[in-house]
Length: 183
Image: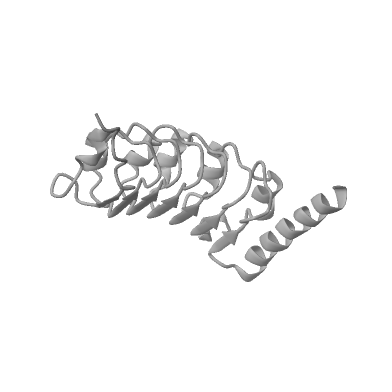
């Protein structure tokens, strides 16, 4: 077990170093078995955080995202958090003024993460395979940049199914309605 943990830490360190040394605009820490975002990365990436536009933390074991993460990587355009254990987002997500796409599929959200409704630049929100029953319909309808909202495989209420063009200016992706029990 210790050896596997050491290998995982070394893999994360290599990926961070590659990003810093090559001054790339993305950080890919998918499939790294992370339970939290490693604090040491903030210091290691201090010189390049403003240039990071894409981060993938998909398929880890994250239970939360800190406000420090959001404020440190303030220039994000794409954030992939699919396949974690997230159930909420920090309010500071509203400060991501360049965020265009966020993938939160396969997490543990029970409600639509409301801070996202205040991110004016968001074009794509993927919330497939969560446990969402409630969606802030009015707030979503006022999101001018939103082009696609994926709520497939969520137990959304019937009111969400009424969200169709021209009421909302984006594509709403839902699973087919389950047939009700026969009388």
